[in-house]
Image (cartoon, rainbow, N blue to C red; front, top):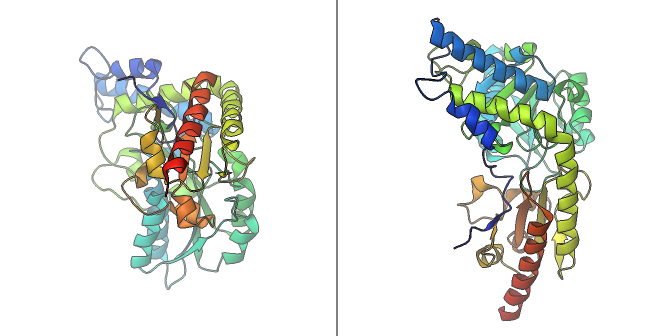
Length: 389
């Protein structure tokens, strides 16, 4: 059977061959296999590779290497930022001051579930609702900030609909009120230019497997002031200044660094190319009767397109599209039978939310594949509607 065309880059990207080559050099006796915490020759060679990779990440974010902490991925980075900040504030607080978190209904489960956990620990959480295009207005953030607000945690680019939030404006609101801002940038780093200084964020999460690096490695950016306000989630060892103890996976870190080095040379041209592919895809799908674009049509990352098809059950359409590998939403929620919480937050009915498909394009996408996808969706939507009761 011929492998289906890949339209799920928002879930994970293949490891670039050049990245894989850099990683393999760190796995065998002939390579850089040492423990980066060891003081002997092999350990120091590994440490050099780790710090070279950290410098590559810093160049992508336009920050200092010392402001980056290695994690296992964006989920852990989000947990460390949200739980670490809120628990540290609660521990320092003499009373209930410092026990309020602001987030939104659009967030990834790694933020929403962390917020639920904090509620069980006695923290207050405000969940902002977006407008119908998926935008969280800076004024909406300002309206819910309180005297005891410690942290605002919002996505930069949504993983299901691709909408970009006005992070710089939101950061200005938070800074004026003395509130820290955490941003989940798993879907924006590597897709658009991300400058943490220009955005004005205090904490930012991202991960390698969204930008042609390996799974299982991520990072958290934290300003020096914010880093000292973090409580670690793990204990046992002093690695990463005590914020993330454990033996560093040198091969994964080197792969992350190599992926960042590559994207710095290709980001601008690739973003423009993928933007054109997404627009081509939407032009083709918009001609399907009762097709609806979910999310703001302009404020979005280049590669993500979420479309609802009225009168069609999304899983049935997904199953019918054997020549395409895509999804109905976040891969993290694929086991759930509930409609997407992101689409529900936009005001879509359960039926319309469950009729949606997420298409995501990447480095290896091309016009021919986009045209195949358009033809396949048209064919199957017409067929399913024809046999529907």
